[in-house]
View 1 (tube, rainbow, N blue to C red):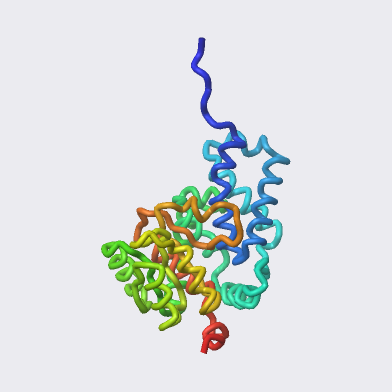
View 2: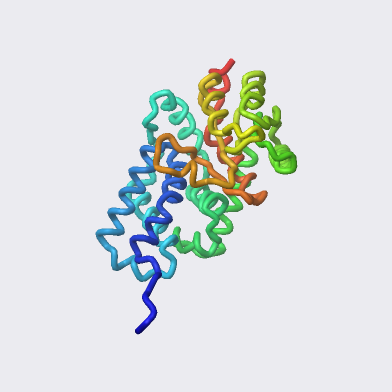
Length: 278
């Protein structure tokens, strides 16, 4: 009797990568509803031409390549609107700001720093050479890191990690307004000095929730970009709405944090938004 084949079938392999495609689509479009629409269209395209993808040695690369084709066929739209009315003006401003990026650089950087594809895999996804993919990533980093500086609130209970995040954030020109180790401390810091960006863990020192801290803080100060850095990314990529655009899994690397901070700041900070908070 032969050994039964326990390898997941193609549908199962695609399904396990879907939450990460949704994360990527949300970050790329700036809209959860628009991102989900593109993710759905991608699945439909794969189902219509299953044979073209089923034999690919990397279902993950196949999934993102299919998304890229759907995105291109739609003309890479940049006028997405979020399904949360309070965010629509922010998203519209952010999308207008994003149009200043060189074409394709944002996609390459998201694929590399957030989804952790190699330049070679990015080349396969975007139908460019590995060298061209590396150039796109480097260009995006230069454009985004040079774009602006802002205030960052860190919500993290582990002192060593908090110090590391502080060092990374300040090394790219941003100012850290404080480090909150508990829900209440984080809210107090955020209200005292409204940040342009929040970096948050989800499990804090007194067993309080970083998610609750962020929600409570945003209720008081309004919508600003949030990056969750957590050992439990599955708690945030559930399919429930809303989901954060940026979720980085621990253990992280410096490049992931630098890129996510720069992108989130660039994506959501405009003079209009800064003026609105005065």
